Each structure stands twice: as structure tokens, then as C-alpha cells.
Image (cartoon, rainbow, N blue to C red; front, side, top):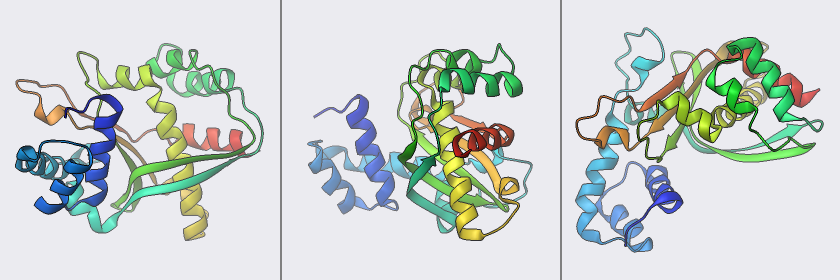
Amino acid sequence: AELSGAKFGVFMHELFEKYPVNYDIIIHIMLKYGIDIKYANDVLSIINKIFTIPITHKLQNTQSMINNLHELQSNSIYELQFNLFIAKNVNLKIELYKILNKYLGSTHPYTIASQEINTNMYQGFLNGIIDVVFKFEHKYYILDYKTNIINHNELIIENAKHHYYLQYFIYLIALKRYLSFRLQQNDIDTLIGGAIYYYIRGPFIQNSSKDFLYVNTNCQSIIQELDLLFIQ
């Protein structure tokens, strides 16, 4: 069977959850999704490559020898579930635009895309799961795997198109509140490093110089203001 779209994403995420994986684990998951097991060795190679590609060089000027997801495992939490409290109904189209216009400007792809949002935040709890949270050089980051076919779009345009920027804003607010509860510190905002979106098809596109790691380490002010909007 061939997997495409959401099913491919679910299949890959299950493999990531089980990492480090061996041949037997891969066979089991492939059978579950009806995939011919003759491709098991190829899948194992793909997973190992995804987890050993350097990513931390994108975060800051660092001399650290730790540079990939495999090496970050001991400082990572996988599939972190959250229940984010929203204190009041929020008109996202209006309020998010104000914040993004303030910090990014009216011509930024995210600011423009926010005008296409057709949903609101409602009082109550927003549930979700963060693929990976990891600590690197005293800061905490979220990482989300994306299985999209990138085509010719720049990653920032892809993020704007699917409103992924809002997704990682919410994830970082959830992470901030989680750390505040667990660490009981007053300087939590300084511990938020940012977000990585890992477009996992990228490393396997032949003759492509296109970047497949989207990194935002300059969104802390947006996170602070959105958090206040949701909680007050």
C-alpha cells in the first residue's frame, strides 16, 4: 500500500515516537499500515538519517558537540500533551493581526495570513500534543515534524499558508506554562528558545538546495503578548 497525505504523516510520527527503532519495530509498524516490508531497510535508513542530521547549528552560535535529535534524546520529551487554559473568547483575526503587525510589520507573510483565519479562541481548554520539546544550552525549544511536500514555496510561505506560525505560538505558550509550573521560576520567558519545523521530506529531495529546517528564535515577545491575551 502507498501512503499519502495525513496517513503518511501518522505513519512517520509513529516511527518517530518509537525511536530509536530497530528492524523488528519497523516491520511491526509497516504491517500495521499495510506497507510492503521489503522496504523495511529503506525506512530504517530514512529514520536514522532524519535523527542524525545536524539541527542545533540553526539555533545560535554554539560550539556544542551535540547537534542532532539522536544526541538530544536525553534532554527531550516526546509527544508532550497539554491543556491550555483560555480565560475568555478571543477574536483571533483581529487580535493576532494586531500583535503580528506590531512585531513583524503589515507586509510579513504571517501578518497577511492572519487575516485569513476564520476561527476564534473560546473560553475553556485547548488540547494538543507537541512532537518534541528539548533543552539545549539552557533554553527550551519545541520541534514539530512536517511531512508536507514543499514544492517551490519557501518555508515561511508554507508556514503562512497552513497557519503553522499560530500552531507554534500556541505550543510555545503551552511550553512556557508547563515550565512555569515545573520549575517555579520567575524568569521563564528567558528560558524559551523558540521553534523548529522539520520538513522531513527535504533531506531526500535530489539536487535540491532548499532548506528543510524552519527556525524561529525571535518570537518571545509575541509569545508573551499572546499568553497575556489568552489568560487575562
